[in-house]
Length: 336
Image (cartoon, rainbow, N blue to C red):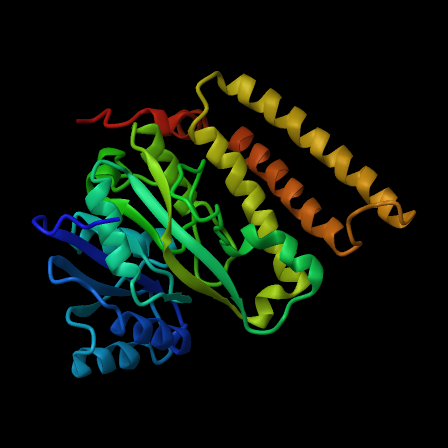
């Protein structure tokens, strides 16, 4: 790809962090080594989401060293990744916003490649790159089957249009996210402290797509997503898949274009079928006739139980909340 050298590209890196000073230091060190063309205007904003560790000192070190040309930090007192991302978006001005997690190590040309892609596809709504999992220690074999649980993103070596994008290294168009009204109201929660809830990045991408913008995968933007050993523990994987099950059900609701009753009927049917399937698979595992390992059954079951939880949450919502949620990604720019 060739960058249009006559056009200034502005991209802001927003790093939302909560008590992860050690890894944040490594992330900022990688950013300090970025090789960025002169016609790319870029800055880094660290959003401190009530950190009680050494996060302020880590950021101050890079401010003082000036190894990152433009870096600053803001405190977001409302706990949760959605609140932190909102703070980052509202306090930056670039045409493109890169959501860089505090455990993502960017390749030295990541910003440059992001700027190239943005120059070639100025009307796209969002794009993401190759997310390679970087294990602290080698995980059990079955864990490798669940890369999606750790935001792995690998769609090959060619640029393509995927169905969705992960939040790690997600680059969004400011114009697109403003068009969706996500700034005014978010429907799906994301990480709140140490709670393993998810869905905020899914909502952003779904709403951008539903607003008529293309989303893209650009393998030239490569990063390593560091996975500490504690996140490969069986209990963690079960819990994160439970959250992902809820996220999928809620995400389906966002883009639903039929009646509430139809949504519930079809969701119950598909989730019941999935429940039966995993019960059958559990029996096969017991009889040693399954392709799955015994440890995988609770993980898959966790995802299915998450979907059941999502169904019950929608059923228990009051009518006004339900009307706002279902199909909300289709109701783009209704107030403008």
